[in-house]
Length: 148
Image 1: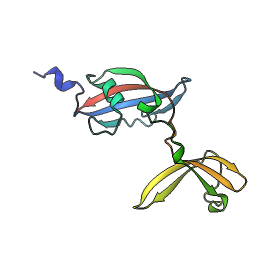
Image 2: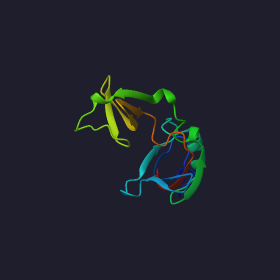
Image 3: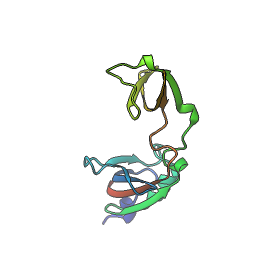
Image 4: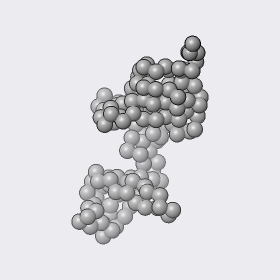
């Protein structure tokens, strides 16, 4: 006989779930269902916010829940320190300075950091290294596939 607690999400569960994210205007921002590749969430390892963990604690396999988190509990607030300016001559045909392009910069230690080009003004290119969803309230729809 299976104990129901084992089938519920607890502090150290590994959770396999489909997650759909919607912006405050109701438009879809992203969904694991697009490529049918559910996310793996490790509870208690700080990979997701405590507010997100709190929302899914106790859910069982097969259950779904919709909840909304403010920016600081979702992808964080937009940090002005993560906005940088580069000279347009650092870009070329292979890596054009075009608004909306996401460019990956290699940091010391081979850490890759994606940045989105927000503005091109004269010879200055504005690059935003904040998460694309930072500063936004996000509604999550989570469908629990499996709990380990």
